[in-house]
Image 1 (spheres, rainbow, N blue to C red):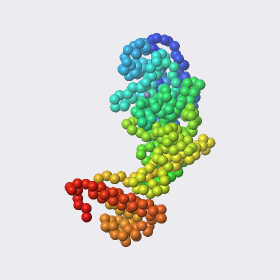
Image 2: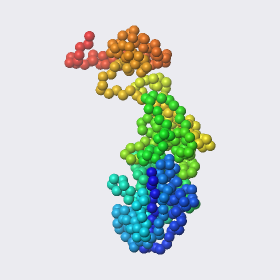
Image 3: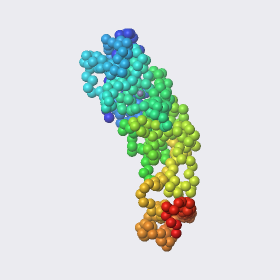
Image 4: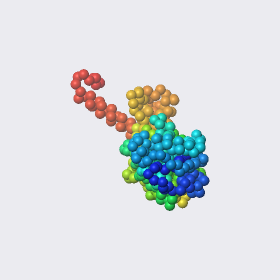
Length: 405
Ligand SMILES: [Zn+2]
């Protein structure tokens, strides 16, 4: 998607100073400024090449006939109004703003920064007052591009994911000599929410039970072959992040897991209470025992980080998933609860399943491994025990109860 921004530099009447020369803004926002850590490249990198901000241009400095006090007095209308003033100043200078996706208005003085959009999400423009830094203004541009604040699981508070740009002021940013700080990146679920995640590079398995090992590349490394994220049942995405480049400020090379709901990403915690999973960390269910693995009522989901290497640019994770059979109010063939699917389908195909003929069952049991046979037997005994307990409970009931034979 082509999304060139018009950057409009404006002076308020309080001061005639320019906090930086125009070229500083050209370097910060555009590909042509000569600094590789420019925001046009940032959005290309964190959209897997989907967003194209080339054509972004810087205009100004324009002197507005307004003061910081004029701006502040507008309160909630201040940001869209400043955008309107700046657009008018640029248009008066002969600038055609129609080719631009949106605008960022940078003023020489003032303290505010933020983003304004219409109720339907259509961008109006971003505002940045005073000394500018890449992380904060990048965050406002990301709002213009449709992202909302990121959160962590268990709370609906904003700004709770330090690995994601959409938690600005509470992030692992990287110092930069001119842009103050840059990064961090954008998580895979936020990328997906805007169509920026390369879905052809997301590992997926739609099965109801699997145990698989997946090698992940760092999320931002679109140029390397392999998977950039893994889809985990339950709506989770796993991603690998390394303390390099835009992410240089993050503490450790680690695997992060997010879910997404109501336009917001939620950072998940691992089983040790930390969100950044390193070698030996896990997420989800406790280590499943082999018996539980065969139990159709027992569901589990577990992710283990097996290894992480910055040198190889790889994280290896193991994903184990077993969907539990959901018991609802539909009629249940008890035999389906006793036998693993392979044997049950065999029985279903060959015989009427609702008549438990011993010969038919024996034939179905023959296709099972000894371990599966043991599990089926243990489930059968469990069902007998449940049935006996229900029968026993009836004995203590009043005379309204059905008569026992
Ligand atoms: Zn924000």
